[in-house]
Length: 81
Image (tube, rainbow, N blue to C red; front, top):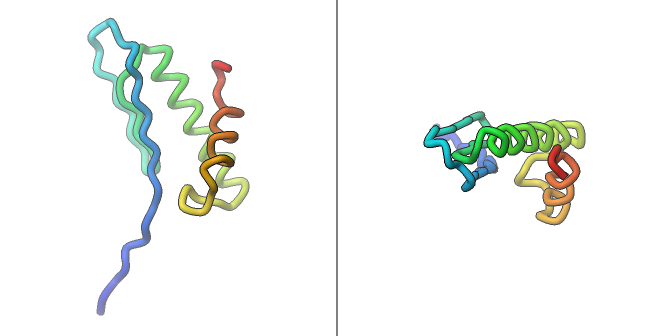
């Protein structure tokens, strides 16, 4: 019996403004946030978490959403805008 693995999208956020030497990594089932200053890392994590909440409310996954719609959701959920 052959099982097919369901393909699933994953978001990766990379922060490049770290100057304090700390290595920040946040991993979840559907995303990973790596690097950044404390503020940037926290903001990216919040943005991605809220983005997946919005997708869940719409009944969609990363595989089912157009890039433009995803970009709009991410922008709307960015607390630093």
